[in-house]
Structures are given as C-alpha cells and as structure tokens.
Image (tube, rainbow, N blue to C red):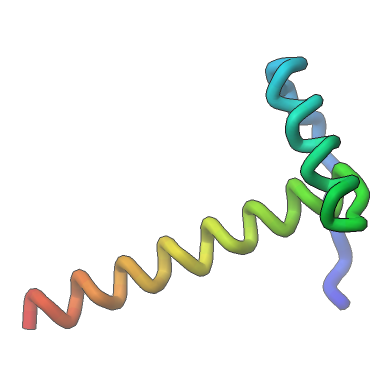
Length: 57
C-alpha cells in the first residue's frame, strides 16, 4: 500500500457527526470513511470524464 500523507481537514461539525455515524454503520473509522468517499467520488469523476470524451468523438 502506498504511503499516506497526513493533512489538516477543516469540516463543519454537523457534517463530521454525520460522517462519523455513517462510518460506524459501515464498520469503518472516520478517516477510513472519508478516504472511501473520496475514492468513490474520484471513480465517478473518471467515469463521467470517459463518457464525455466518448460522446465528443
């Protein structure tokens, strides 16, 4: 697994509470849940980008 880089994240307290609850529901740590959500968003963005490129051809 690639080395991870630590950084400070400023987040709305209500949003953090929701993510913490969601993480608990899915048996992940809060950090793990945030990382999972970011990975899913990146996958979705890549798919949308590929579809856009295909439609432009």
